[in-house]
Amino acid sequence: MNSETKICQNCQQNFTIEPEDFAFYDKISAKGGSASGGKVPPPTFCPECRLIRRMAFRNERALYKRKCDAPGHSEEIISIYSSDKQLKVYDQKFWWSDGWNPLEFGRDYNFDKPFFEQFKNFRDNFPLMSVSNANAINSDYCNVADQSKDCYLISAAFKNENVLYSNRTFNNKDSLDLYVVFKSELCYSNVNCKESYRLFFSKDSHNSTDSYFLYDCKNCSNCFGCVDLRNKQYYIFNKPYNKEGYLAKINEFDTGSFKNVLKFTSIFNEQYNKSIHRYATIMKSVNVLGDYIDNTKNCQYCFDITEGAEDCKFIVWGGVLLKDTYDGGPGIGGGGELIYEAFDTGIQGSRNFFTSVVYGSRDIQYSFNCHNSSNLFACVGLRNKQYCILNKQYSKEEYEKLVPQIIKHINNMPYIVKIQNDNSKSKNEENYREIIYRYGEFFPPQLSPFAYNETIAQEYFPLTKQQAIEQGYSWKDSEKRQLTITLTTDQLPDHIKDVKDDIINQIIECQHNNQNNNSNQNCNEQCTQAFKIIKPELDFYRKMNLPLPRLCPNCRHYQRLKQRNPLKLWHRKCQCAGTQSDNKIYQNTINHFHNQEHCLNEFETTYSPDRPEIVYCEKCYQQEVV
Image (cartoon, rainbow, N blue to C red; front, top):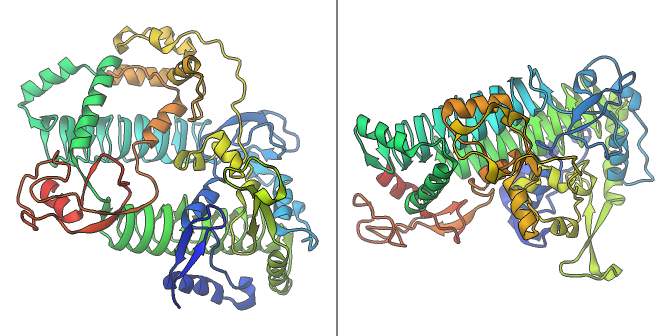
């Protein structure tokens, strides 16, 4: 079969469906005959719009307080669903208990209404789990987290202890303000780092200790402001020192001062822009395309794949022996296979289509938060069940007869969303276009229980309120908070040694809120306007000689997000021009394989052409750095 170019229903841009893509859709359609529910058609949304659509259903970090709706319970609980949402929400402990029966909410399928409309009505009247926070010890304010101890405001996290204000972290201890950090201890404000100890303000650095402001450094210790180093000790801004000279300089730098940290951040950013950058972080992999990929084979347009994947495409945040999967994530893997258009799904699952939070299950379609089940269609909250539709139990024969009829109905009575055309201020009918949802599409984002800016879609594909509404998403304005700000950021002590114990009783205005009040602009980073310093946090700053932050936890999270490249690729040429970089800023240290000529290598990279970084191909990078 030849490739086919289509126009995305959502963004109206062209995208291509390749022969191997058609083969995948045929593969997931073929097995099981009529029991599979019919042929899975090729998508009508481009890959990026498909990803945004899934992300618009995933709230990781927005937490609220509301009443528990479980029978006999009315206590206040922490929830990812705000109290203004007309939903039924159970405390997670009761939700997992045997105190209620999810099948009691089952209903007949209605062939007189569009499928997606029915599913939303069913879901909105079904008990939803307040947060996903399993095996937590003194870690109530966490979500999409497992095995957390003494943690606070962490998300997408696994096996952390005494970790605060962090996202996408695994097996860390006694650390703050992390983003994509694994197996580290006593670390602060790091992005994409792992297996490190006492590492601060660093990015893309591994196996490093007692260091500050590192980029792309491996196996380094006692280094400050360095880039592209391997197996080094006692370096400052890439220059070697003896031990005594290094320690004297570090004491002089004094990172306990906020002004000093700002100064060295600026110097480090200059160092970063003068260094060379590997076109992509790909390790131990064969025939792959994307970024942050390791131990993977035959995977295209994938990002943040760890511990292996094979024969996959369009995957974000996945891996762990994932196979034969398209459009997966965020959160996909754990030995799963034959999965399509799903997120937070896997754990030995198979043939899961258009699902979210589905584990250990097979032959599941259009379902949410179902576990260890099989042959479900449009179900919510089921465990150890099979042959159910809208949580109603059927026999095997009834199920296999009804599912194809439902799929036919979805195609014959599609769900239609009307979106106002770009730059059109008129409300006339002709100024709207239709997006049509038939079988084979993930749930329309208009059906998400969350506003766009409550989800990770806003984090990775940020929009203003006006842009979100114009594109058909909902938006949640900041809830009014009864705040009495007792300190502004310019009133905070510059040095941590001058901070008094009563700081934990103060309500500190976020620096962004202060700036916005002065400029009449709105922060688009879910700014909480003010924040508090909690005692474990203060103890950490004092122990590590680090200054108090000036931004609220949400704004700090967005500053870390800005340090990662986007989840998309650009075709570019290597910027090695023989003896130096194209912009003549970086001078090569040795003669490269192309000698004095410009490198001819081309690649796909997450560095867009308008960015300042100097991007080298794998060969040129290896000759300079490794």
